[in-house]
Amino acid sequence: MKTDANRDIATRLAQVEKTVTRTPEAVLPALVLAAKWYDNAARETDITSRNAVNHPGFMPVKPLRIPAKMNNYVILRVNEREWGAGRGYKF
Image (cartoon, rainbow, N blue to C red):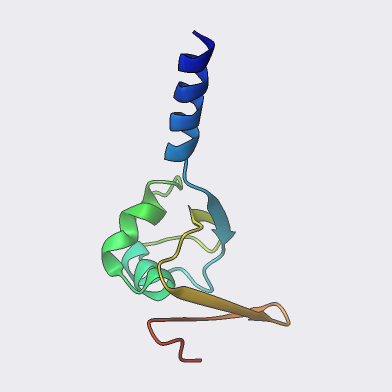
């Protein structure tokens, strides 16, 4: 019984994806944020599904939870400003 419980807990923890908080610079569609943050506009549901938003076309300027894994994406933070680049890391 204890082994089954441990296996179940391990399985559930593996399914939980780590998230980070990012704040958009302006009110933008989730599609644009996904393209900017993930280099993949199709990942807009990764943003909208984790945040209570009225409309995916108008993501508010407030902290948003997004998956921490960002598929070949690098964020450089300097003096409270962020720059990001994917696939070749062009800054």
